[in-house]
Image (cartoon, rainbow over all chains, first blue to last red; front, side, top):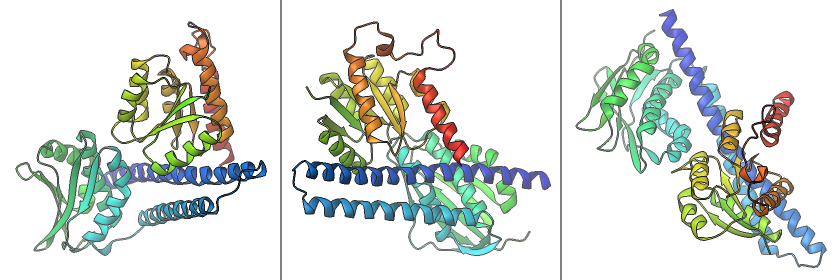
Length: 220
Length: 159
């Protein structure tokens, strides 16, 4: 168990590294636009000093653009902050919807790079006890393997349903997705997380579905 | 004659603002939001410099760089990245990038690099700079790669 805990922590570290790299990239992109806007303001002032009149509407548009980029960066930093805090979060009662929406937000940029859209199924909130970080990490491993085989224009839907004392999380892929192959890779790579969550991974090739079955009430 | 620049980035806001700033500097700028859109353009129109984002959907900057070089080995491609790693920078330079710059970029530096690429493009065939290859006699890395790595090392020290 100690060995698996160690490996789960290593996977968690990799998860943190991947997500922080992605979010810092997003922040840099927003900063790059703020930087160009500030530069353009300086350019316009320099032109005004040479006699070209300043257009107030253009200035208003630049101010609005800067404000929009600051909001964009702020939302990324809030997500990063929540993610950083979640790593140390203890076992808690949480809704699957909350976990799905946060995982989808974390992975959105990397999904977009691979032409994948992540959606969350409507009306499927199930309460469960778990360390959200570990569930998110396992979901990320599923998504990562999907991204690796994606040829673009793919959608994956995250959903959950009650099953007595368990909750079944489903990742619904497009029809041609090699779910059995992805399932095997997830089981191999995510084994320490699967053990830590007392979970089970299964696939349904006909429905292009990967199922993660987890206990609703987690006992360490 | 103004410098012809092809600017490729999937972020429309970035494209709009950077192209405006380059146009203020008397450059003739064309913008596209994906490398795939750019391939047909470079086949039909001459550009002095291509400014390419390293990370984009559909096809990333390094794959696109390889394709541009296959279309025309003399195309001068400057990569912009918000995600600088030494490995990617070295790979880009080995694939023939004229330079690798990190976002947010200093417009003076970018303008200087664009003008340099125009000079390289116009220099005679067989010139070492035009080919953008790492000289075999170089003691290690080319100047551009060294500067790129030095920049990263400097920032690591600061943090």
